[in-house]
Image (cartoon, rainbow, N blue to C red; front, side, top):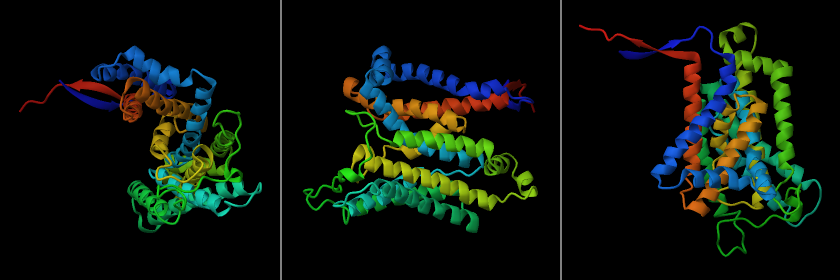
Length: 356
């Protein structure tokens, strides 16, 4: 008997929305096996990974701080994915946003004013959009695969960051460490809760969720995005321009990633350093899919992925587990989600092996 995938005539709509929950449960079950292999008590690992990081007010605020860039990028990526535009290079666009925003903060190092923070955020958006515009140009002009170009540009952005932080952006009084000056108080995001790192970027992320929902469900552009993604031929027949959608979705996702980069350097970090992201741009891809490519779903899935970052750090300190456990958890979550999606649209059928 050989297994064969057969397309279902009517996939379950309920399971489409329940599959992220199922994927999370399967990930938790698989994590038991992972922890046993590593010689760690699953109960102790679960407590360190999922409960201890959010057992205090400070921990809860850190969860929101970690979730903020994931929400910003995840909502924007979801728009592109709905249109069939696969921007995999949000990490590079985030880095460019950090460079543009951080350089703006350094330019106003000895100045004060309420205009500095808006300028930093705007420049971060511009930096991310410029990096995404390269992908859009190559896609629309030469039909270059946006998955490859956006991904490769992430490595270029990382090398550019290292070049700048070891050169013109390096703190002249920093004893040759590869980092910029600490930003002035005027260039730091206001704190929402005293004694924590919770900043106004969290409010911006919530606004982006609302804007993303309105754009998708209440505007002509959102309708065009969905039609081009679901039925490109029908969209073109209706007069919708695929080139326009490619440019718009890539610029939106690039701008959002750049905004996240600017928020990181002017928020939790407070300076430009060689690594301003632990992989938010790549994790946001998982966030978008776990959130079912819906802005509100992205908000909740971002909190789950943010917890994986906090849990990985806590498990490393408390149980001496490698930080790579975070990546394994995120990978398992995406794997089980994709597997669930396959079984939503297809069913297994066993057929008799043909004989010669």
